[in-house]
Amino acid sequence: MKCWNPEMETMSRDELHTLQSERIVKAVQYVYSRVNPYRKKMEDAGITPGDIRSIDDLVKLPFTDKYDLADNYPYGLFAVPMREVIELHASSGTTGRQKVVGYTRSDLDLWREVMARTFAAGGVTKDDIMHVSYGYGLFTGGFGGHYGAERIGAAIVPIGTGNTQRQITVLRDFGCTAICCTPSYMLYIAETIEKMGIDPDEIKLRVGFLGAEPWTVEMRDDIERRLRIRTYDIYGLTEVIGPGVAFECDARAGLHVNEDHFYPEILDPDTLLPVPDGTQGELAFTCMTKECVPLLRYRTRDIAAVTHETCACGRTLARISKPVGRTDDMLIIRGVNVFPSQVESVLLNIPEASPYYMLIIDRVGALDTLEIQVELTPDVPVDQIRTLETIQKKIRSQVDSTLGLAAAIRLLPPQTLPRVEGKAKRVEDRRKL
Amino acid sequence: MFISQLSIFVRNSPGSIAEITGILAKAGIDIRAFSVADTTDYGILRLIVNAPDRAEKVLRERGIAVSLNRVIGVQVPDVPGGMHEVFAYLAECGIGIEYGYAFVSRREGFAYAILRVDDKERAAKLLEERNIPMLTPREVYQN
Image 1 (tube, rainbow over the protein chains, first blue to last red):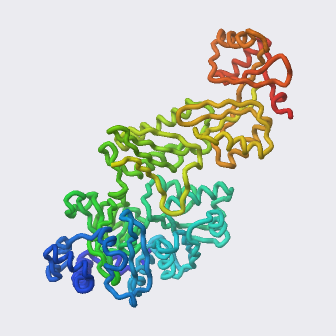
Image 2: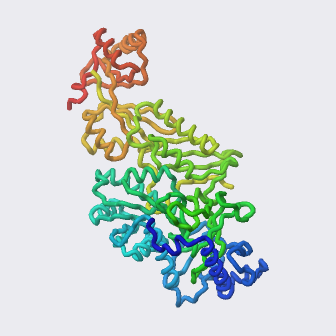
Image 3: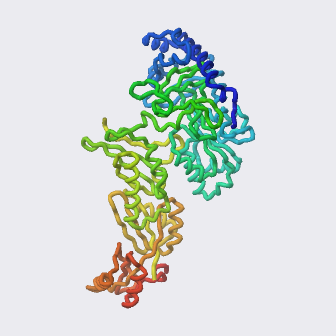
């Protein structure tokens, strides 16, 4: 096991419970005395800090969500004066206002620590060269990756996004051994390497830390096979810290939550009550140690399950399943819940189809329609309409049995859907609801 | 006996054929015959060109879905009933025709029908037996 902080990562559950309890009591007093909107929320719920005596009392606290950030834009939830803030980040949201978070010096140290754990779990050491291909800027990906590699002492190539051919030249010539980026960009890099006629063996890359968007096991297999690397899933969100909230170990049995800092809960989507281990629900996090924006019971909209069993890797930190989607990614089509990632799994099992796709949802009269646009791979024999119709039928029947929903399949020539360097856009909902 | 044909998968939208012809024009490739088959969603552009292997390579490099396959070019006399004679014969022999289109000869008096049939080996043999001439690679690829 490659552990950055064995004390915290393998602490017994009892000790962890005590630590979390101490920390949550302090965190609640801290926000109550420093953040007006929080005090008001707690007063409205009839709660005082004295009601929280251990982590088990967390359920008494009201939730926070993206609307709290929007309503208090930009700095209304900050618990410290600006003189203590040394960095700001933001992520765009569906509320129309950016979600702005600040970091104190101690918050940045915390971020470095959790990202160092993330990379160390994938075997990164100071001998590595880390190619940071997440965007630098208000988005947390670039800096998060940077800080983690910096804490470990790896050499950082702060390349950011864009200019894929140049990125590949840098990967090869600089001898980068590790990379962090979105899985869809990793796949695009693989595709471009093949197009440039470069042998993957010329590139020393060994590990990739991929996240910031949902991806499937099939997509992972595809990336690992094409680039001959091992990949690790990473999970995070700006509101909590950025990347580094949870990370994958070699056991590949879920993502370890850095539970000494971020307490995870899984909530029933209807009742918002915590569900037992192994049951899927909405993921919420409580920041127990942050200084600038310590959100409590923050609803992520991501759907996952949690387990508290000790992992095969030896870590005791709870594990969340790879999020299957987001409550706001989830599409309801003709009453059926659909996640774009399900379509992706189907396509990755069909050799004639590329993993690039677009879902177009519309409403004709009272009926929802789903069209899936799929790019063919370049070597499909395209002479006969019959062959193409067979491919179309195969995709249609597999989509039908996976989603429980009939979809129209539209085949597209290779390389026609837009390639992106950040998060891929795969849904166009034209319904006027 | 057989000639090479390029089949290209194109989107059903304006400009998608021009994209292909543009790539071929730039590569100095001469298009000798073409046909477009269309469905609601997409089209298949089929081409006979003077340099099929090179054409396939330049298209593939551009990420175009293209396949190279072998078809028959049957000589058809340019007189009433000329076409019928060929098709009636193939029908009699039970050869199924999947698709076809015309290829104009540089020689006067006849044209060629480019055909994809269900059993091209047998069709070619039958045509030879009947002394119906077929388009030779030589005639297609000459410049």
